[in-house]
Image (cartoon, rainbow, N blue to C red):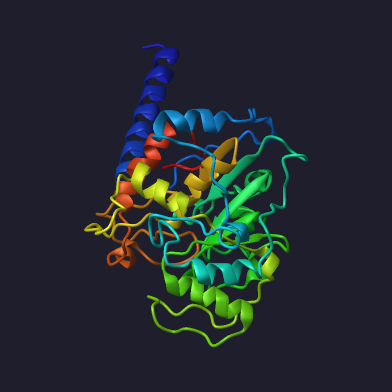
Length: 334
């Protein structure tokens, strides 16, 4: 046998051994992060209205003819007529909303269509797939960076970046330092799930007696955020997310208590606001994986969501449809 033949046999053996090792590794550790899809940054082609045109094909009766945030004019001159109560409408909450909106300023974004007519947005989820991703610099290059709840930025900048255009939250998830985890001009966007959420915000803004009832976890009693940095998300987006992406009934009496997560809601909101929508850090471990953490910043597992009103597998299907239709793009493995 020639020397070349020996080398060929040795090479084939080494390749075969490597392939077996890779297969074994993936089977043994199926939830380890796979290579990340790095965005093209500034080279991403941004076509104004591109996401809007695609969303119409998937979401029935999709329209952008709705304000992003609630405005005082909706309740001052003529009360906004809503068919649903919170979280899908403002029926019965008009009076308290008027008092809150009188303190906060009118809708204004840190970025304008005049300065940049085409908006590239990324919705940064809280998932464990962001850990060790080194996506920080990529995330910082988007025009609008949306973050969720109490997900930290400080000490995680290399993986999640440090730019925050807006942060969607609810009172129970406001247990963070707004100055440490946000930029000075970041918008804090309240997602009101229930009337006590509005009562909490009103008490914070007016330094009134705090409400302690009606929360599944006590929200902060002191919360140092300027009124001009606070917005209230239009419940229309919660309605669209539940009724059109999750096909959940929102008409009373509601037998199904399933509610969208803040993450899926943020994606729906981004479809309304942006021309390019990318996501990062979305997705949960398989239900059989009891040890994998669900967040990049804390050691909790899927067990913590057992009593929640969220259906993570249902939401995963909705996100996959958006990905398959190329309405959104994922920067991390989903």
